[in-house]
Length: 155
Image: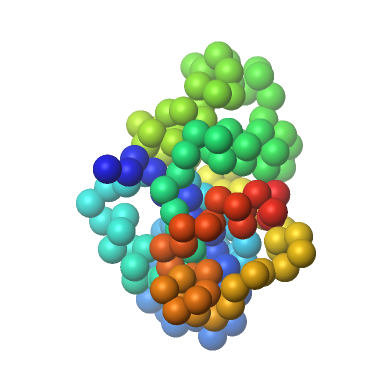
């Protein structure tokens, strides 16, 4: 069973219904190309399936979690995360923090100075699949098995 999900918003803010906007705000995905890592709880898959036409998700692993925290992790004031910040949180290294987030033991929303989202850029060399269809239909939306490679091109 998965412990945490990597979730990325792939569609913009125009013409999004109110119920979807509310769900996306709860997931901390207010803008396009924002990513977050959420732990697996009883309501997580229901929320993801409800807004599957606006986001992509996949099970998070330790490598991508560490890479996101290292390169795109920010604290208040939009500054990079330092080792002093990690010691204040009770972690010795970034690997420890990434491990606890990837395993679902710690929610990134609950870490106070660290922002609960990662700002990504559009992918280098563009999308290889349709951005308007779900993964099963030949697109990138919904549960996407190739999301980690896509996120690496967006970092």
